[in-house]
Amino acid sequence: MVFFAALKNLFSRRDKRTSNASSLRSKKKGLSYSNGSQQNNSNRSAAANSPSNSTTNNSSNNGHSFQFKDGRRYHGDSEVAYVLPNDDDEADRVHQQHWILRYALQCNYQAPVTEMLEKGITVLDSGCGPATWTFEMGEAWPNSTFHGIDASCVFPENIKPANVEFVLGNIAKRIPYPDNTFDYIHQRLLLLGLTNEDWDNALKELYRVLKPGGYIEVSEPDLQDLENMGPTLRKLQYTMSDMLKSRNMPNKVACEIEDRLIKAGFVNTKLNMTPLKLNHTDKAGKLLWDDYKHGYMNVRPVMALIVPEWQDTEVYERFVDACGIEAEKNKVNVNWYACYAQKPA
Image 1 (cartoon, helix red, strand yellow):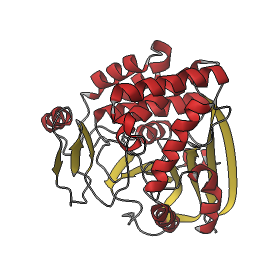
Image 2: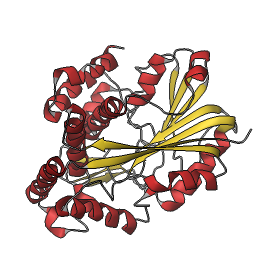
Image 3: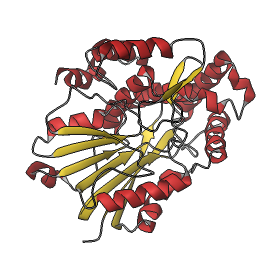
Image 4: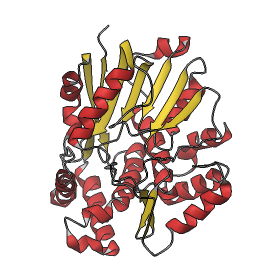
């Protein structure tokens, strides 16, 4: 597919996030979201840029409900804890984030499923978002079938490989598949989307839909304790932790993945921790910082509930920029935890 092939060449062409975002937006115009209407997609983008706040279908739980705050579009379902926006800017960031992680980690997965993928298996991407991982995996492994699930309809509905499908669903409530459906389940970066109870419920549901002997892989970064961080980054990271705890969301879930998988009934766990460079040493470090800053700017409204002075966007951005300088000077690393396990055979 031309769109995702173009994304793969991103890093050889541009290093700046702003340039990347512009390129991604121009390529995204051919994709259809939600109801498949390009016009409706444009209307939602225009609404998301409106200065007024409004709420639409807030009680609906169909993945198409949303609300607007400070010109950004958010999920409108009160049962979904996700704190980041779900508009085009955030989708662009997540697309870029996928390629940055692949570039830094040199892989799309760590579970021992390569031979299975070659032969042909059924895979679930849990919390797929705009589905960059799902699409690339679908293209790489044509004998396998990939299903993406997300609580919000931010994935392309019409333009996709023949072996990729999507469903709307809240993984913390009910995954709309029968027991023992999938050979491999992949999930990452839901630390800003699940409460403690959501994690327990989601892992129970993932256990249910995984086949006996199948693999699950869950990956998260530790966003509280970075390696070599100084006082500026410490304030940013611990404010993130305080924000998560105030919402009953686990602030150190990356370090708890293995224990949570075991508690849910999975066996044969294997935990890997990879330190990812943040704004230093090489291209991967610089690219990761671009995504890091973009993500923290998108989560500013909930961070400002803990630190009121961050209500001022310029004040907050200057502080985040200072964090980038500190990360470069101290050679800060973000610890990336990936744990895979099996459902007992």
